[in-house]
Length: 496
Image (cartoon, rainbow, N blue to C red; front, side, top):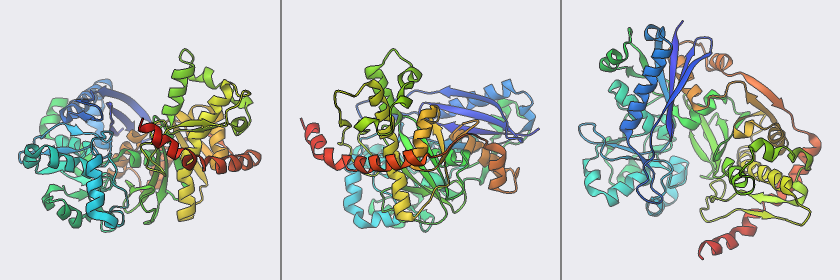
């Protein structure tokens, strides 16, 4: 039986998923690597660590599943978005990669806004934010002139890994869309943006589709691993786009809510939409398809903060065991989950969280439920933008991550989003999307739909309760006033 391998290059580790033609997960392993933080706000990694992690994962997989040495057909990737890898003329790494969660580039974002003005969003469909790649390039250009002089091209993390495994340099569209250098309408690097910042045309790598073959594993690596056949390598995709494919988000009436440390509300888009930069807008891993996405900076992090602060010795299960006894709206208690600032729809680094409406009748279970409701309301802000700006209606929403582990929270999502919520039987996130891209590249399936049917299996379903939906509509209308009501106070407090 043939196998494909998905490599998911994350912020703390690289995970490998080996899957057979039946869509069965045969083996999974991972390898960690360190985060380098030379000073506050800086976040870097050594790209060599990613490559060594990939070799470790490959060796472990082939040792655990010996018949994969002659039956592994293909590899593909998913990877952390935006992080900058600079290569010199000899294709050597110039400096540590500057990661997506590095926030040193505020001044460079201002430079982008001042230089491009109202041209930026029509070209890239996204605002200039610290996480994107172009601000990182400009930081090196301004602050490390010698390093920038050496740099001849740039790659993103999983594209660098593809280069090391095949010798071929390229970038696929779902990741390129997050650089602030891609003209989304033209599917080409924006010459206007490159010229505006004195960047050479050949500074950007060639563009390919996510399911395009970029080569085979090099002979050296194949020999090192003891492989008996050529192994095809496919370009892969950005982590959120790959996660969307891995969750079966391939039509415009299906959304995805992902609650980890941060939270994401994501929707497939069949054609170009105009959100004016209020939502992230990128290419999907499916050819000529897009996705829109809103981000809540402190989703699961809000719950973790609450637990660590008020119930450190308890499990999450114990903390949340009584929330079903609290009515929707937490008896008039609202939580604004802005403890790390906010991204969608406000893009405000100085806004801070708050509990509103506290009185002496509120107990811990009211606060716990209010935290879950506040996180979900914040994600609903993105759903609301999609519905009001693009007229979208969601037949169902796939819930993944920490928010898919508590039945009371899942029912809350169904009621707040007013949509059917489904969970997945085997949730493997972006890595599963990478696996599926390899399978599609190898021609295992006649269509994306067939691939999803084989690889994505739904588990539990939660339906909205009309009574609760109506109640939450009223509470959400009040929640929507919370940002403006607390903005000025938050900004003043941040200056103390």
